[in-house]
Image (cartoon, rainbow over all chains, first blue to last red; front, side, top):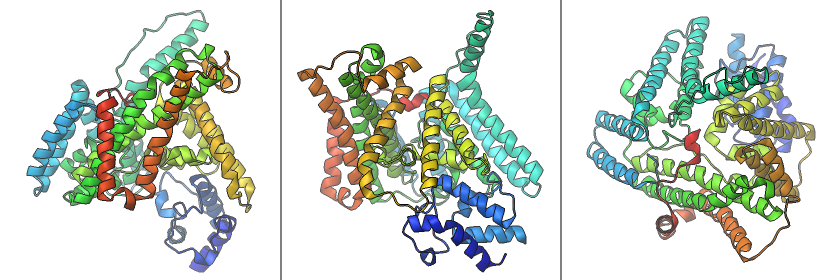
Length: 85
Length: 463
């Protein structure tokens, strides 16, 4: 998937959460921390990651990667693209 | 050595004088920190110093070994597993040997093989849980490439033995602290002032905890005959005691570190103003709950998050104490938190009205009190009796002058520390104005000197 596709996928998965937190999708910055900004809590984060991994077609092992690196839009895009490359 | 003792005051004064002498020499500062940390730990039990050094050696050595095996995934994972097993193995031997043998003994007794095992009593080295957790987080972070392995043994030892949080937290991760030891900035006057304020307020909170402790103890001793008023007064006292004791320790540790020029993570954020079980645990013992999230809940897997959550909290209960009551307490919170997440997931895009907080706040606090009844009672039966007494006591309630005074005192013990913390955390610009800061610090010290009993043990020392 290309960057824009990945971004679109992430924003569509986060849609309900963004609306609940009163954030517009285009207002979410690439470096905004999804946990600290209250879009996701730690539990919703793992549920979101699993759906994201399934949709992108990779196996997620949170024992192997630093979860903190996946808490931003840019971090998620970089991770998914890194796996593809 | 507890932070609320005269001996600590003397120790800190001597240490600070030495530290001030070497402020411009980074290597000497590290040596002073390690020597200070080891002396502090030795004062709590010199026989356990070799254990601290062994834990330090394991995490230092395995950190380097894991980093060397970065290119070889299987080898890296084996080294990580071995390093964590050794670190956690030390904790398991000292903390759970008695629990395992007594559980096995009870099981054998039911099979008619009573007293088959010798009763083993192993003295728990103070702080072992905290430095073990720090060690595990370091090894996992190196394996995840979240930070490089530390090569400088002296700097590494200064992190592990840093004395303010050494015996009862907060849990200080290497990725937060080692960069500070690389810079070794001298303390700024603003941090020193803030540190003094936090230390004085922490001391005052500990004094509050000790003052209400007898009321809480009386409830747990007489659980079977408690009236409704006794149950409420006792549980509220226990809530005030737990908060004052543990957040008091954390404030003192953070304050000491700030005076030395180091920042430690915040460990409490007004937990009794939470509107759900999930929120409580994002505000209480934050360094532990985030540790559990990052190093247990997330690695357990994303396929079955509810199961991972229950396992994490059951283990959290077992960490708090080697007994089935603590396991039950962990399970209680695991179920409540899972239920909260389940409800949240089913709310979809619906927003909970702000007014609901009027119900959520007292309900969450009541659930907290029920959890405390489980945490403090000797048996499940006592817990049930105490919780039942909050609705209908074993005896009629009599609100005489003594009972009213006791309830008012407990109410103050709950409200005042939270109110002061609210000012410090939510209005720092106001709290740090010189007259307010020094007024609060002085009030905290005077209150502690007037009403405190120096040297009263901290509850979290036993974890």
